[in-house]
Length: 274
Ligand code: SF4
Image 1 (tube, helix red, strand yellow):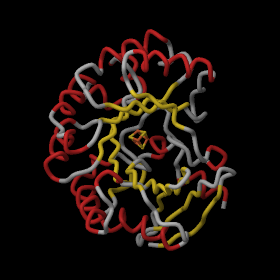
Image 2 (cartoon, rainbow, N blue to C red):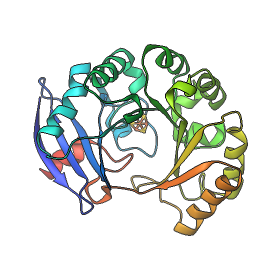
Image 3 (cartoon, protein in one colour):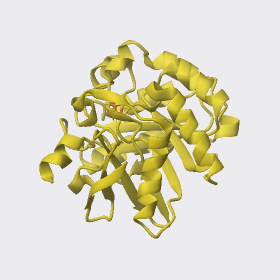
């Protein structure tokens, strides 16, 4: 596998198009945050989940990546930057827990390479059995891409929710050993007039009451299909969650101008640009 192209955003986010040995391609991203350098890696070529806000989901699914191909993305990106990669998120193309064995092997390989579990985050839309298993098979941080406070909205955004509704996902999270594995992280993409109202924030706050240690990351949606709410609306949503007692962050959106931000990875776009 090798890097066949790179695009750099104005905020220094770097997106790489990586060709695998069978000529299929994935994208990987390096994101600079103050003193940290975070590698966002892909776990599948395309994605079978088909979230409606996500460019990757519109590519369809080709195949799972091997553990070597997942770790290989980090090695390739490390070879073209002097700064040490400090954090790794499994948040690129694909649903990590649908490629479970290779993802666990990759996490364990990275831990042997001196990355502590606090520096490795597996982000999933929520496959309940695999969440339970992950807590037993390795040690890493867990992020749930929730994006909605109820099943009616989530069914429209994350189609796999019809198979694994919110209650089943959160019940599985209750069994994840967070005392050993840090806080539960919730990813919530804010979409104008879909899930961004104060009533949604209140509903979300009520939904998460069983969890003691939680961090909610709000992400302004990138304009793939939907529009983000105004900054004021996002701030009001955040404040409502803070008032309910949750640590809540509006995550800075990185790499928008090169389609490297959350939900924007899709190799066809970069191929068309080359
Ligand atoms: S958001 Fe994640 S799980 Fe959903 S389609 Fe995109 S890559 Fe797949």
